[in-house]
Image (cartoon, rainbow, N blue to C red):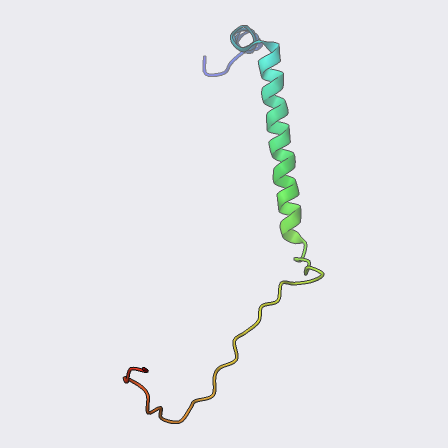
Length: 79
């Protein structure tokens, strides 16, 4: 009673085919295959070292301004 015979599996497969049809099952399996391929490609990309771009974006760093002497015009209004 605990094990399923071949007749049980045939009935289960027949019900699944009647509910979903051959087209939907084959489309589903194609989607699963594409997902597996994309996963494998992603895993292979992780194993490769990151390539450096040919011309990296360069930024211009602002040079720190030299400290100036005490300014006398701080706080005064220029006319």
